[in-house]
Structure formats: C-alpha cells, structure tokens
Image (cartoon, rainbow, N blue to C red; front, side, top):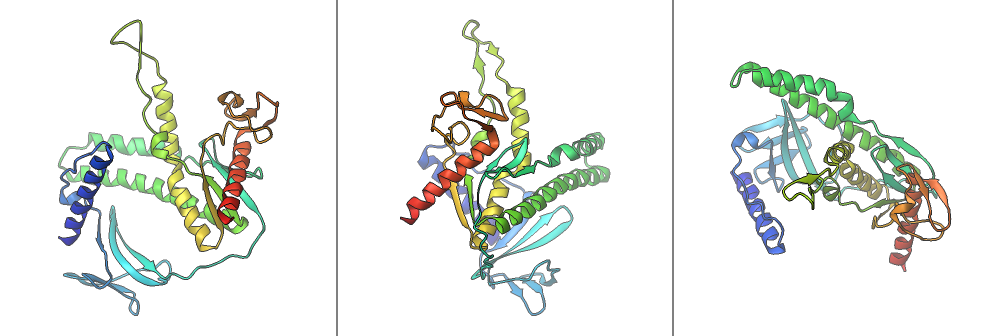
Length: 319
C-alpha cells in the first residue's frame, strides 16, 4: 500500500511540475493491480531487509525468500526492489558506498558517434556493427502476435500466447542489454577519455509533421512519414539511451574521464576550416566540405568533431 501511495505521489508531482513548466500535463491515469510489475522499499529495513549472511531477502508479510545471486553485493544497501518479468522474479538492490574499480591508464582518447547503419563509429576509425535485434526476431515475433490475435479472448490459450509474445520482447531486450554491457566494457578498458553527444532521443523519434497543401486546403502533401517511422523504429531498437547510461556508469566506476558535448554541428561542421552547413553531408556516408573541399567518412568525421569538442570542454572545465 505504501509503495502504491508513493507511485501516486510521484505521478502527481510530475503532473504539477509539467503544468508549472507549461508542458503537456498528462493527468495521471488509473492503473489496475495487474499493471504493476515492481514494488520498491525506499529504505533497507523498512518493510524489507537484505540478509547478506544467508543470501536471502526478508519481505514483510511473506518472510525470507532465497535469492540466487549473479554477482556479489558491494557497499551499503539503500533501496530494495522486486521486479517481475513474465514468470521471472528479480531482486534489485541499490547500494551506496560502492568501492570504485579503477583501470590502468592507456593514454587513448575517443569520440563516439552513434548511428543506425553502423551502431557506433569512433574517432580512430573503429566501427561497431549494428546487430539490429528487432529485425532478427521480427518474423518470430510477428508469428507469435498473429497466434495471439487468433486466440479466444479470456481463454487459457490466449494467456499462454500472450506470455509467448512477452517472452519474445524480453529476449530482444535482453540481447540488446547484453550487447550494450559488452561493448561498454570494451570501450572503458581501451580509452582513458570518452566523449559522446548529449542527444535528446525523445525529439529524434517524433512523428513526421503533416505537410498541408497550400493549393488545396484540407489536403496534405507527402511528408516522408513512412521513412521517418522506419527510422524511429531503428533508433528505438538501437537503444542509444541505455547504451550511453551503461557506458557512463562503467566509465565512472573505472575512473575514466566522461564528457557529453552539444551535438550542434558535429555531423556537418568541417574539422579543417570550421565551415558548418547541411550541404557538407553529401550523403549518409560521405562528408565533403563545400568551402575547403575536405573529404572524410561522415561518421568518423563526426566522431573526431565530438572528441575535439570534448577535449575543449574538458580543458575549459579544468582551467
């Protein structure tokens, strides 16, 4: 009950904050008990307690529950959360005073440009391929969704098929997260300084705006909505936000320098003469400066711009 009230309070705090800022308010909506997939205790010992000696968690009203740990708990447990994913239950412990694990210095620095054709391109020319998890599972996911639609509503068969669809989505999410962790670990082990763009991904995946036809009121011109929708799906499948969050956490834990730069003109600004214009990107893959004629692979060139901006910001901050 306390967890439900905390969720309600958080929802209304967000509502009033958006009203005050002039954003779209989005009044909190009722959610039934089956919509809750997690419950959190904000303080260890207040309704739940972690028992490190027995590797169990005590939950008020339930008792002690055995936990299968996949890593040792470090630091002081601050909050306890129980999450449900399908038929699986997970314990999430948030800890304070976690000791850092600094890595030896390498002297290397890198700017990182994320994309959908190539997942990440580094300033030294290194490329990370995009696995495109959703595309790999698209056929199996579509088949599972079709079987779900054919099942009779309210039947046990429909419940089972709904779980199959959810399991497909979990598999995609788990593969994506595993990839993010592995790539982030490689980058942190290799580079002392990492610079990335401070992207607002929510703005990048918005729908294409309607394009009214000035000659025919009430009619609309083609606005590339289908292509934009495909790009939005690719961006969402890439999970840049999750990747950057994981990379940042690992970088800070390893004692690496982490810098986020303004993405303005990183893709169309010339690294040689500084000329910035959309025309410099003659194609998705090629950069050609219209002023000085400098040519370079577009993503690698953007990554070098990101690194240069990051180093400038780092120097200014240190001064």
